[in-house]
Image (cartoon, rainbow, N blue to C red; front, side):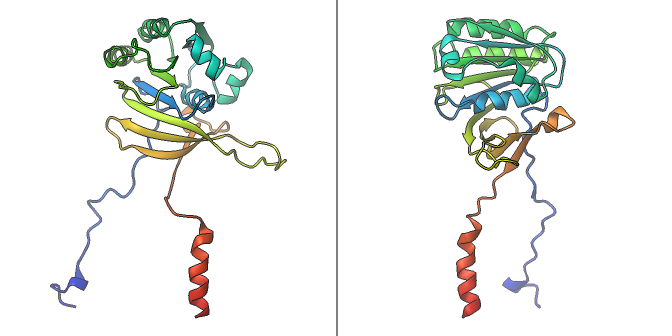
Length: 240
């Protein structure tokens, strides 16, 4: 076939990046990450962050304001072990978001902590872009990962290196009782990040994973429709 024919074009795939790395928010990078709740009273954000905590026996500082506790509730201690967490949680409960941010900054400067988690409701003035920038720089300087759970916030400006929006999905089928809720599933939407492309994944916690980095499983969505929609045209074509 002639090389100048339009049917003889050669497409080189050697320079194409066919596989995109799935981001690992539990990889242990010491940065500030935002996790926004996909809806009110949705506990997916808490489970997502717990799945991302480092595999360390060092304590985690967990700070929450009054309004975030009313919406997200308090941590249930016995359930922490289900997420493979080995250390202790230093829980600090305050009334005002200003105090949450102050405690997070102090904790981010403490190298003895494995992580700092803060919960703030809404978009208060104290949580400005400048304030989050200061928290991000302190996290990177001390190498302590910081997670900021933001409920009732539709995405105000932030200097976080990664910004996730997490919401609950229908749970998996229970292996022994189809009428009972199965393993929880979450929709994890990375809508802003530095150095990696955004995307949407189905996320779940893998309690049997050997390594901490494998405990959060992100499954990419193919974008294809249900298989049943593809069967009808194929059947009609076969009959014809």
